[in-house]
Picture: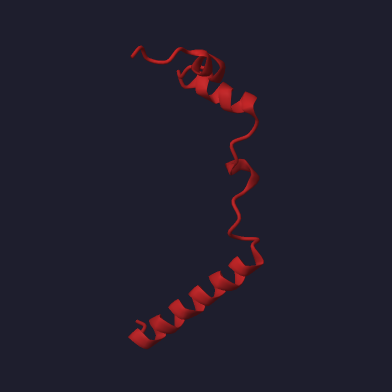
Amino acid sequence: MMSGDEVDKLLAIAIAAVLIEESAGLSIRPSEGRREGSKWSIDHRRISVGRRSILKTKSGRSVNR
């Protein structure tokens, strides 16, 4: 079992490693697959889950006042 000092040292090493990698910007940047994609793919996903298409949403009239 590790002592409190060993755990603190490992925690400091882990934090330092993350900060060093973050400054390089390679491991923290989100992958291409996390981006929204084209307007077509966004619209296709909306329709496939049962929502209205972007065209129908934007062409709808506002609420009567």
